Amino acid sequence: MEATEADHRANLIGRQDLAMRAQLVRGYAHDRLGGVSSGGRIAHEVNRWAAEHGHQALLARSHLQLSWFFNMIGDTPAQLEHALRGLECLDEHAPARIRADHLQALAGALITNGSYAEAGSRFQMAEDLATRSGDVHLQIKVLNNRAFGEVVAGNAQAAMDIADRMLALAAMHDVPLEITALDTVASAQMALGRYFEAEQTLLRAVERSFGSRGTNGEPEAQILLTLAETQRLLGAIGRARATLARCMSACEEGGLAGVRVGALREQAELLAMEGNYRAAYELHKVFHAESEALRSVERDARTRTLQAAFETDEARRESLRFREMSLRDPLTGLYNRRFVDEEVDAALRDWAIGGSPLSIALLDLDHFKKVNDAFSHAVGDAVLKQVAEVLTRAMNEPAFAARMGGEEFLLVMPHTSREQAISRCEVARLLLRSHDWSTLIGDFLVTASFGVTFASSSRSNRSALLAAADRNLYAAKRAGRDRAVSDLI
Image 1 (spheres, helix red, strand yellow):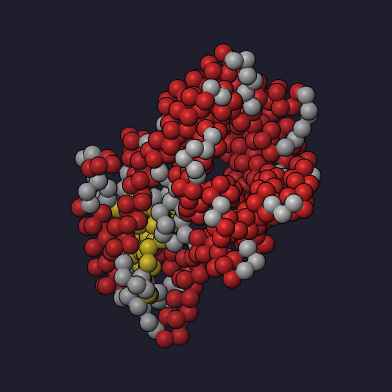
Image 2: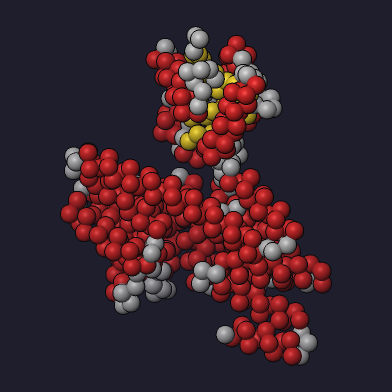
């Protein structure tokens, strides 16, 4: 209401810049209250006005809010682009809090795009600014975000060191930590296997969150889910089950589908830990079905949000770009399973009508778990990105590589015979084997096993084709790995 009144008064006195500033505040409120499309539309309109009128402060702020908007709808490249442009537009004399906000937004965008080292340097710059300003609340905010970034990057000890500094600073100035900060501390403790400490931290968060308000919002439900997982890892099955029941109740009351999906998975884990594998398996199927349904709903909602936020020709371009993004794996940039399903079905129709050969190959990286265990998941992700680049080089259009999940990939090769497909897979296999991995994993060798197959009367649909490729892949594994195995006929 205050922002709306400020907007009205600014228009009365002819100060359009102040009206635009008030609109940005209103857009920020819309974002935080769930009106993502309204917030995005307002930020876009202000951004366009600021660019036309050369208003740098509004341009910087509107880019910052657009970065938040694109983060909320899952478009991480656009999130990074606007975070960078917002910082570039910022006046060099901007107050420490504003500059720190921009640096943190950029660091967050770098994290979601997998650039952890670059994110760390921006967080350090934000922390230096906060320290020099003497603003304790700002320092705590930066330390919390930086610690969480290290958790995401897989650097548990670094995350704990930063979290300890945050705890000490809060205690020194008698500042109670928000539940999000306590959740970050617990995440670092869990990553280090300090489950008892994590449980105590999360119990503090639950007491603080539910004690005075009795609220059932998403942050509170997520805290309960994390607490249940911690208690399970401690072996406290009874406590975990009781906490999970509270979490499910909060999900039902608040309509929190995303947290509910996580709670279903945790329930399955509890059943398996108790030895009730049949019930765990059945519940895991429910979790998988609800997870897929939720992803589909979220994709549609994001597309509608984009259309509502940008009702222009640019909006249609954004929607098309978002559809392209929805067909790609966010880590490697390769096409994903959804794209594979569409393209393989289309290629099979072409094969059935015209007889043009179609071959595919499933490939799985050999002993990839050793990379994650020895070097960290962040390094493993970097390896997967380079694997994707190698596979892309080995394919010529219309052939393409896709990521099926984990360390499993698919090569789809239209107009390619069995012999040609085997030859292409050999090229890809040798390129992977000879690639210079030393900067990431030293002397560790990355190899892959390939299962090659082709469309035929007995493999005339996608399921049969993928099943044949899968059988040949496991035959390659059993034969010693680092090889390609194909159908004989």
